[in-house]
Image (tube, one colour):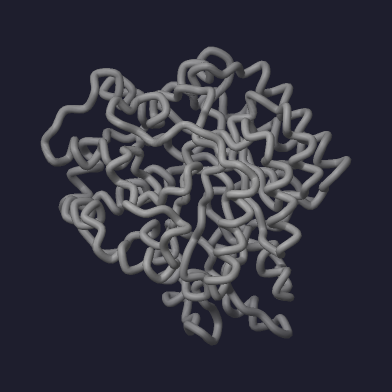
Length: 386
């Protein structure tokens, strides 16, 4: 979404550098590997500047730039220093699937409320953010819920776009009743999550049907051509031990439809369950079985995190507003006790920031190094898809 947000501020984008996303054809926004970042080559251009927009790998990218003699604030800038806060509005507190790696499918405690955000509440929230946040270029209209289940989604996208805000949507694409009107409203970025095809998809996207999703992907491609050719569509492939053979099938679908293709190792959420596990509690039996299917052994990752602690957390500046207006203390938690006592309309953004500085969940998380947990999975790309 940084692409469209920056262009709206009259920043010309020539392309992107990314190690995990594949560009499927020449007509897609240009994406090259990090090795292509060469200062001598860039110096031959008339004017150039690098904006680091990665969330999870900002520090890694900056180290690469510094090693190549790039100078901060002269040759490059960190997007996080332009944009203090990331905002996610979970317009749907409901998901029709029960994925075993997601709290909608594995959480046994008191979770979040399951309701749909009304358009008027959403409009008031967006107006509040626009009024109080100095640089508010984009918003994600999803978190744990499935946004396409909310019939107000097209109006929500349209309102944000009319206010100059870029919109990102992530969907399992099993229900497309509101897809056409949503694409007509012109969101900037649309992700579809998959976890293989056929039976394996049904196991890891429980309640979903691969044949239906494949047909809906074709429909998404057609709607993009009709209504919004500029939209960036990405297929995010969740990699497990046993679904590597399906990668090429999905990669070819992306190539045919001119979608971006991203592979990362699947991981288990929510964070509150992982923290309790790292602190000595047992995982639910079903989650422990699911963990055996992951590419990485979570116990080994947890041990590594504990011995390589840092104070950096790419998610601590993300404010997630749930469908009922409550504010979660972290994007990765699901238990209702990890929401702030007051709702978004009862607090200024500065007051939210002050409360975030006192979050107990952050102290517990960093104390065992779990703030670096997800980067292990998101940075993994199997050799067969490079």
